[in-house]
Amino acid sequence: MSDVSAPARRDKEKDRDRDRDRERERERERESSARAPVGDRPRPAGPRGRPGDDERRGAWSVKARLRARARKKARKGKKQMFQRRKVCRFCADKKLLLDYKEPKTLRLFVSETGKVTPRRISGTCAKHQRKLALQIKRARQIALLPYAPKHI
Image (cartoon, rainbow, N blue to C red):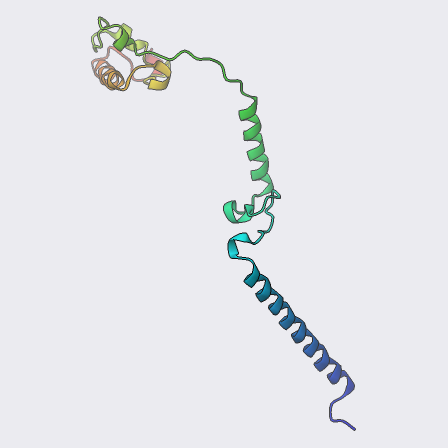
């Protein structure tokens, strides 16, 4: 009679089979990596189905995907209308003075909340926008223009 019981013998055989399978798998991996260079190997598909998405961006949550889709749809829906290029009033009309003593002209460049209108909206050039901001501040200082919207 043998020293090892039948269940113990079966366990040893299972372990041996498992080890053999693992070794075969490693050999297959070595062979496949030796055949194809790293750059030519197919990448696993990411969450959007394209290869390599996970590596570039990381996995997106459901909410993030929905938000991205909504942004894309909003961009697509907007129709591009022709807009005339804004021209700086002070460059176009050299006679128009930029002075703190003329609150009527300065009021055109102050919003109803009392803020200085930005260049992209007013159309003034950078040089005149700087001067304009300075003159508005001076006019506010001597109470020709209001600081707060309640005083307008």
